[in-house]
Structures are given as structure tokens and as C-alpha cells.
Image (cartoon, rainbow, N blue to C red; front, side):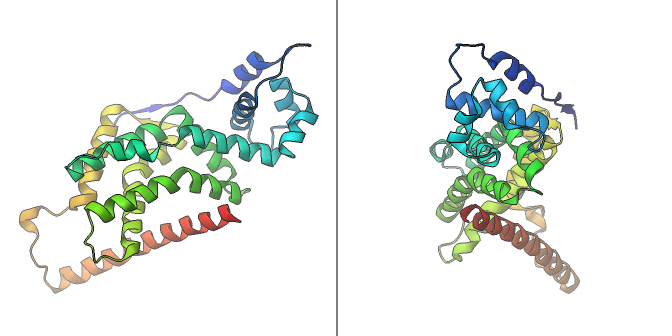
Length: 262
């Protein structure tokens, strides 16, 4: 599988140079301030980025920035919130990709979400969230909730409408939505956060294979016969392990939602 490494980010230094204001020149808009701050946070990290550096790059007085945001943490969260709002795929776009064929629908959705998470804006958000997840878990939780919540809700609704039996427990659709994101989107997103991005051909194979696996499993149709006792026991063990992993993922998401709501 061919991969390509993304060059180190240098946009912050260029942004700072480009946006530095001379005497008497108007300051940046609030949106540009947040963009400038986000670039500096990504390049230098949260701890090593000072309000002074942001103000210098933005051509704003410290009192103006403090009056708007109060402190560096609030400015950081505001910058990320704006970036997520601009980056996230609208549910209307996902809904518009639906067709009569569920597998084709899920493939289209997977391709849209993969392209979005692997865009420069998506990778930037991944890296920033990962960087602060240990020291600022409440911000990481908020980012997770904002970035995945609407998509998970849409997928759960899609699976209730078109995949699961009407008698299925309500939670099954939520589990299926989470499993779909982990299976189809999670792998490429995690590797991209470390600087390794799959090429287009590899991504297309990954999306098609994982969508098929999600809907049909691995066992060929002609071999789907009733298992004997040892096979049944092994399948139960595999199912228990998979269920435990999904439960852990669900707990982490619920924890993120609670932290984001506090």
C-alpha cells in the first residue's frame, strides 16, 4: 500500500508574517484573528503559544483580545469551535447522497467523510485535538462531540430507517453508527494524524472494502451454514470481544458528551 508523508506545517509563520500590521493599519477581523491563533497553536503547541505572539501576528492590542475572550484557553476553544463549524459536513449533504441502494449510499457517505477528515482542515483539527487530549480533556471532549455528534445522529437515523428491523433496540442504531465511523473512517484518520495519508487508490479500496464488510461480514455467502459446537463457542468469544470494544467506544463517546456539556 503506497503512502505519502505530509510536509511539516509552516503556515503559521507565513500567516504571522503576512498578517502583521503596521502602525495605523486596521486590525484583522475576528475570523482572521481566530484563524491566525489556530495556525500558531498548531505550529507551536498550546503551551508555547502566547497571547503576545497572537496579538503580534494579528496586529491587535492585548486588551482587545482579552476583552473578547478573557484568556488563552477560551481563545483556543473559540478558534477550534469556528474551525469545526466550517469543516464539518452538513447533514443535508449526507442525506442528499442517499440512493435506493444502501451499500452504494454508505459508500458515498464514507467517501465524503474520508475526504473531509483527510482535508488540510480536518488533519489540523485532528492534530490539535490529539495534542491537548491529555492536558485539556474537556476541550478534546467538546471537539469530539462537535465534530462527530451530528454525523453519528444522522447515521443512526439512516440505519433505523433502512437497515435494522423495527423491533431492534434503540441503542442498536447508535452502536451501528459508531461502528461504521470506526471501521470506515477511523483507520485513515488516525494514520493521517501522524503524517501518513493513503493515496487515492488505497483510500477507494479501503472505503469499498470496509463498507462491504460492515454490511455483509467476512464469511462467503455459500459458507454461511450453521456452525458446530467448537465453532459456535469461538464465534461467541469473537462476538463478546467485539461487543466489549464497541461498549468501550460508546462509553468514551458518552464521557466526551458529558465533559462537553459540563
